[in-house]
Length: 200
Image (cartoon, rainbow, N blue to C red):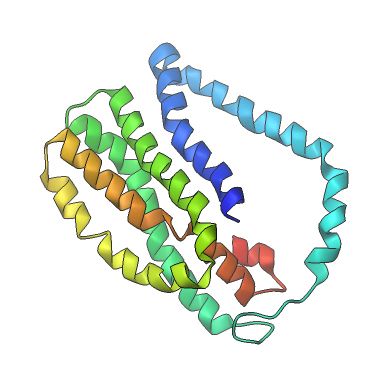
């Protein structure tokens, strides 16, 4: 799951730099080039369709959840609450970090994209290393981590020093992204017969 998650994190890390370069070079029309990667991936996946049937037998298995039951809806809903809180912070940072860099710290558009890339570059490391910890240990510690990250945000907003803001941004990424893949795996364990729903 950690390896799988790296693919999405690469998109978040490279996307801001790629998009900023396109807009600076050709304006808003330059973003049409963003359609090229998904089209190429779509064609590749269409060519791999026959290989997916190999894993159909695995999907029919009914492994037990960590609690020993085939389905654990209560823990799943509690886990979903944690994920919703995490998502609020994730998309807030994703949306407002470049704007903060440009409008408050008075940096260039390219610097704003670079700051977002720096945040998600840290996410790449955290996502890739999360698998070594298993899924229960990081997931149990994640609610505690969520409460560590918000106190950093007022400090982040109170500084007009770019270097300090960058250090805080890296720290937020460290706290926030370690448990991405463990949370997904734990959700799949709680709903073993509905891994697609759990993953979503």
